[in-house]
Length: 66
Image (cartoon, rainbow, N blue to C red):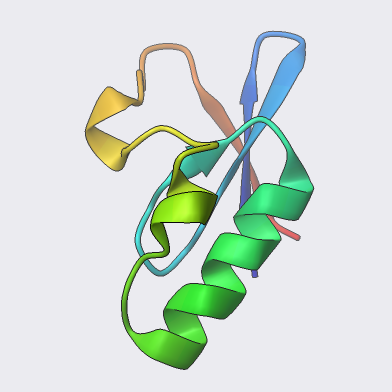
């Protein structure tokens, strides 16, 4: 299940396997499906996201899993 984080008025979606962050839910779902099936990241998918270290947790409000 993709994790949703609210950043002000924006929502950000994260792959629960690798932690990559996406502004588009579809990319996060594709990433999670790939990670789960292959135990690795897909370069074509993660090119649309940001690595977990790029997250800013200040003021983030977790909405939960979708």
